Amino acid sequence: AFYPLLFQDFLSLPQWPRTSEEDKRFKKGLSLLSCLYGNASSHVLFLRCTEVPAELEGVTNKTPYHEKGWTNFETRVSAVKKRGHTVQLGPLPQSWVPLPMSPPAFQTLLEKTRQKKKSKKRRPRGSRLVCG
Image (tube, rainbow, N blue to C red; front, top):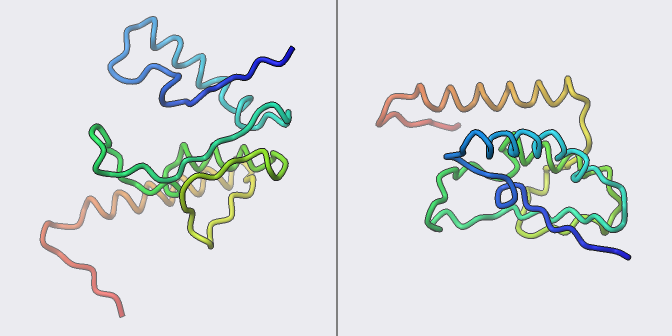
Protein backbone atom coordinates (compact mmCIF):
# COMPACT_ATOMS: atom_id res chain seq x y z
CA ALA A 1 0.00 0.00 0.00
CA PHE A 2 1.12 3.56 -0.70
CA TYR A 3 1.19 5.96 2.23
CA PRO A 4 1.84 9.59 1.27
CA LEU A 5 4.41 11.56 3.19
CA LEU A 6 4.01 15.27 3.73
CA PHE A 7 7.17 16.97 4.85
CA GLN A 8 7.78 20.69 4.94
CA ASP A 9 11.17 21.38 6.48
CA PHE A 10 10.25 24.56 8.36
CA LEU A 11 7.08 23.04 9.81
CA SER A 12 8.33 19.46 10.19
CA LEU A 13 11.60 20.27 11.93
CA PRO A 14 11.75 22.01 15.33
CA GLN A 15 12.66 25.71 15.03
CA TRP A 16 14.25 28.04 17.59
CA PRO A 17 14.06 27.96 20.50
CA ARG A 18 14.71 24.19 20.73
CA THR A 19 15.25 21.84 23.64
CA SER A 20 18.31 19.55 23.47
CA GLU A 21 16.03 16.67 22.38
CA GLU A 22 14.47 18.83 19.65
CA ASP A 23 17.95 19.88 18.53
CA LYS A 24 18.90 16.21 18.07
CA ARG A 25 15.76 15.64 15.96
CA PHE A 26 16.50 18.81 13.96
CA LYS A 27 20.06 17.70 13.15
CA LYS A 28 18.90 14.19 12.22
CA GLY A 29 16.25 15.71 9.95
CA LEU A 30 18.81 17.97 8.27
CA SER A 31 21.02 14.97 7.56
CA LEU A 32 18.17 13.29 5.64
CA LEU A 33 16.83 16.26 3.64
CA SER A 34 18.77 15.52 0.46
CA CYS A 35 17.12 12.07 0.44
CA LEU A 36 13.72 13.77 0.30
CA TYR A 37 14.55 16.59 -2.12
CA GLY A 38 16.51 14.40 -4.52
CA ASN A 39 14.27 11.33 -4.31
CA ALA A 40 13.53 10.11 -7.84
CA SER A 41 10.38 8.18 -6.86
CA SER A 42 7.19 9.28 -8.56
CA HIS A 43 5.59 9.11 -5.12
CA VAL A 44 7.76 11.97 -3.83
CA LEU A 45 6.89 15.44 -5.12
CA PHE A 46 8.84 18.61 -4.43
CA LEU A 47 6.57 21.55 -3.65
CA ARG A 48 8.45 24.80 -4.13
CA CYS A 49 6.73 27.83 -2.61
CA THR A 50 8.80 30.83 -3.61
CA GLU A 51 6.73 33.65 -2.24
CA VAL A 52 5.84 34.26 1.39
CA PRO A 53 4.06 37.56 1.96
CA ALA A 54 6.44 39.75 4.00
CA GLU A 55 3.54 41.23 5.94
CA LEU A 56 2.67 37.88 7.54
CA GLU A 57 3.28 37.83 11.27
CA GLY A 58 6.59 36.17 12.13
CA VAL A 59 8.23 36.60 8.72
CA THR A 60 11.68 37.94 9.54
CA ASN A 61 13.73 36.84 6.53
CA LYS A 62 12.69 38.95 3.56
CA THR A 63 15.50 37.68 1.28
CA PRO A 64 14.05 36.46 -2.04
CA TYR A 65 13.71 32.68 -2.34
CA HIS A 66 16.31 32.31 -5.10
CA GLU A 67 18.92 34.25 -3.08
CA LYS A 68 18.73 32.13 0.08
CA GLY A 69 21.37 29.45 0.50
CA TRP A 70 19.12 26.74 1.89
CA THR A 71 16.26 27.11 -0.57
CA ASN A 72 18.78 27.36 -3.40
CA PHE A 73 20.25 24.04 -2.23
CA GLU A 74 16.80 22.41 -2.01
CA THR A 75 15.89 23.53 -5.51
CA ARG A 76 19.16 22.39 -7.05
CA VAL A 77 18.99 18.96 -5.40
CA SER A 78 15.39 18.55 -6.55
CA ALA A 79 16.40 19.48 -10.10
CA VAL A 80 17.29 15.81 -10.62
CA LYS A 81 13.57 14.96 -10.42
CA LYS A 82 11.55 14.30 -13.57
CA ARG A 83 9.47 17.12 -15.01
CA GLY A 84 6.09 17.06 -13.31
CA HIS A 85 7.51 15.87 -9.98
CA THR A 86 8.12 19.45 -8.90
CA VAL A 87 5.18 21.73 -8.18
CA GLN A 88 6.02 25.43 -8.46
CA LEU A 89 4.02 27.92 -6.37
CA GLY A 90 5.07 31.53 -6.81
CA PRO A 91 7.43 33.32 -9.15
CA LEU A 92 11.10 32.79 -9.90
CA PRO A 93 13.22 35.14 -12.02
CA GLN A 94 13.21 33.96 -15.64
CA SER A 95 17.00 34.12 -15.71
CA TRP A 96 17.29 31.72 -12.75
CA VAL A 97 17.79 28.15 -13.93
CA PRO A 98 17.84 25.68 -11.02
CA LEU A 99 20.30 23.16 -12.45
CA PRO A 100 22.19 20.82 -10.15
CA MET A 101 25.59 22.24 -9.15
CA SER A 102 28.79 20.57 -8.08
CA PRO A 103 29.65 21.09 -4.39
CA PRO A 104 32.57 23.46 -5.23
CA ALA A 105 30.35 25.55 -7.53
CA PHE A 106 27.65 25.75 -4.84
CA GLN A 107 30.29 26.78 -2.26
CA THR A 108 31.39 29.60 -4.60
CA LEU A 109 27.76 30.71 -4.98
CA LEU A 110 27.31 30.81 -1.18
CA GLU A 111 30.51 32.82 -0.74
CA LYS A 112 29.36 35.39 -3.32
CA THR A 113 26.01 35.68 -1.53
CA ARG A 114 27.73 36.19 1.82
CA GLN A 115 29.95 38.90 0.33
CA LYS A 116 26.90 40.74 -1.04
CA LYS A 117 25.22 40.64 2.36
CA LYS A 118 28.35 41.91 4.11
CA SER A 119 28.74 44.80 1.66
CA LYS A 120 25.08 45.79 2.15
CA LYS A 121 25.55 45.81 5.93
CA ARG A 122 28.67 48.01 5.71
CA ARG A 123 26.91 50.79 3.84
CA PRO A 124 26.33 53.73 6.20
CA ARG A 125 22.78 54.77 6.89
CA GLY A 126 21.49 57.34 4.48
CA SER A 127 23.94 56.40 1.72
CA ARG A 128 22.57 55.70 -1.74
CA LEU A 129 23.64 53.54 -4.60
CA VAL A 130 23.89 55.43 -7.86
CA CYS A 131 23.51 53.41 -11.05
CA GLY A 132 24.54 54.63 -14.44
